[in-house]
Structures are given as structure tokens and as C-alpha cells.
Image 1 (cartoon, rainbow, N blue to C red):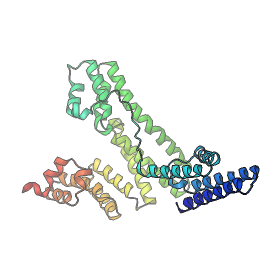
Image 2: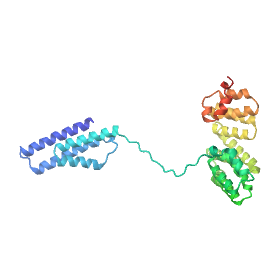
Image 3: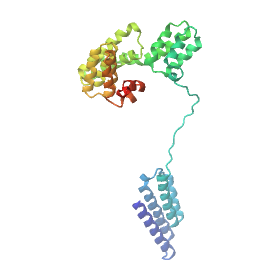
Image 4: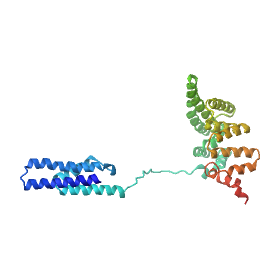
Length: 328
């Protein structure tokens, strides 16, 4: 602001001297016009100096200030200076937050609120349910996590109605088509990979992709063992190259837990915790293992180690039940 004040003051004094010279000292008109034009340049320079303090800075605004200064001697400089100060003040005190809006034509309630998994199962498996009811339920199942609902949708592949079977197949096939090309491409790349780091990246990717097939129940039951072996094989191969990868340790722990190998799962989870894995991410699985082993006191100890668990990884009712304050 200091430079703006000095430049505008200098422009006003300079313009005043030019007017005095033109009317009293006999300054020629061409010389007066040429020198007077310089006053406008000085004002524009002052505007340019404070452009970082203005929200809107355009060449059209600069042209406006120049025109005011050129066609209205002295008073144009005062008017330009006043406008510049107002712009700066408006930028500071009149900020408008623009929020883009989207027109919503239909808001669908989540399935878990309208049906719940039990209601969905009833509508799909009931012998008295008609085709439209089943199709509607399958369609609404898209609002539920695939890992929870895919097994139920898979049962519709043997339904008596062709449309129901086709819709269920399309839902599962659409998810599978997103994963299988990635798996096939990674397998091809791994065959030609020679550098250990490149092999590690591809093996880790394959382990997680095969796990995704298992987690989403996109594998036929008789193919589950094959997917488990692939996940375990690629995961262990990647872990040999990067033993400190906590994400791989967590993945292998979850896979071992899925295969009911609790000792292996505990080993992987404990290694991940030692290497710095977010402990709240591991504790629910440790609590699940403790529950399977009927070590209920251990569950309470796990659930009281952190206040982040009920808000992130656990159902609130579950946390309150196993919390130490529940007994009081």
C-alpha cells in the first residue's frame, strides 16, 4: 500500500505541475498531452503493485483507471485511487463462498435402513416372492457392501426365473471384470520382470487382487482354495523381498484368519504391530481370535487399549458390551 500511495501522490503532483505549466507557463499542447499520459501510466503501475492483494485483477480494470486519469486530470487520479482502495476493502470484507449445487431428482434410502440384510434375504429366498420383488431386492443390494451381499446374490444364480438369474450374474460379472484384467496383466508383467523391486510390486498387487476376489465372494466355492493359494503364494513371495511391509503382514494375517489358522494369523498381526502398523487396525482381528479361543478377558483388554476403536473399526454396541465399564 505504501507504493500505491506514493505513486498516486506523485502522479497527482506531477499532473498539477503540468496543468500549471499548460495554463500559466505556456506549455505546448502536444507536450502536455504526452506528459499527462505518463500520469495514467504511474497510476496503473500503482494498481499493478498491489495486484496480489486483490481477488480480481484484469487488464480491463487497468484500462478503466488509465481512462479516468487521462480524460479527467487530477480528479481522475483521485477517483482511481479511491476505486483501488474500495476494491481492496471489498476483497477483505465481502468474500462470498460459492457452493456448487446439484439437482437431486430421487434420493434412495440405504438398504440397511429399509430392509436390512435379514429383510433382503427374506425377499430373495422366500418361495412366495414374485419376480419383481426379487429384482427390486437385487437392485437395491447395490447399496450394500459387496463383501456382505455377494454371497446372497450368488444364490440367485440358481433361481427359477431367467431374469433374476441374469441380473444376479450381471452384478457379479461386472465386479469380476474390473479385477480379472488387472490380474491377467500383472501375471504377464511378472513373467518378464527381472528386477526384485518390480517383482515385489507385481506380487503384492496380485496378492491383494486375489484377496479382493475372496473378500467380495466373487470366486466360486470350489475355486476358493485356488484363490487362497494364489493370495498366500504371491503375498509370501512379496514379503520375502520386503519383510517390513506391514500391509502385506496384515493381509496375510487376515487370510490366515479366514483359513482358521489362528497361530499364523497371530504371528503376522504381531509382526505388523511391532513394525508400526496402526494398532487400532489390528486389534479387532486379535479380539476375533480371542473370541474364537474363548479368551473373553483378553477381548476386554483389547477393546480398552484405545478410544479410537469404537469410532472407526467396531460397532458401538459391540464396543460398549466388551468395555470394562459395562460391568459397573
